[in-house]
Image (cartoon, rainbow, N blue to C red; front, top):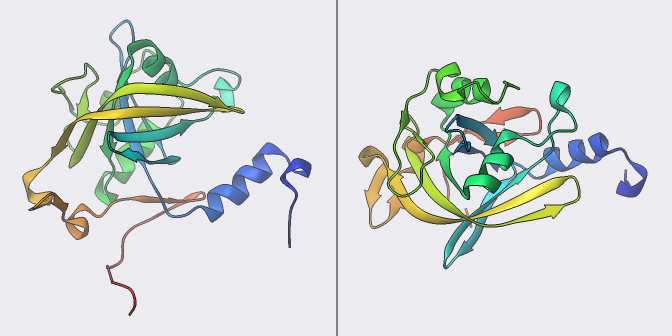
Length: 198
């Protein structure tokens, strides 16, 4: 089989991409609105954009379902406040992460809806997820509109990791971290590490 994306619908292309670019890490992005409302939402179009200076990027699509034709609160808040926090999602945090992905009204606090604890950041005003073992505070570098989506690039200005996940020498205990991955409409967990060649 082969496909010409120009001949497919947006949904069909999305299904091919999200099922092929796998597994994807999940950025659990916390922001704050102009009025001070807390927001939390997961995004699996996420990666490191630069190592020096350290930058991370997420791609935010348009609103879906009953919010079709609108911009997501995460994008609105980052554009307005120019800062955000990326929290790392573990398998254990999968259910509250899923709860925070629901289409809730902008005034609803996703931290509260998902039973999570917001804690102060050191530099940015957006709150961190206390339960997440790793949190990265970011200042907005730029937003690039790419078709229907917006690529948000943030400079990491502060890094937090819970002690039990830190091995020393700037290394992370990945087996303990047990990061949640995205696979099309499903999720994945890490099932052991190995080196290549075997």
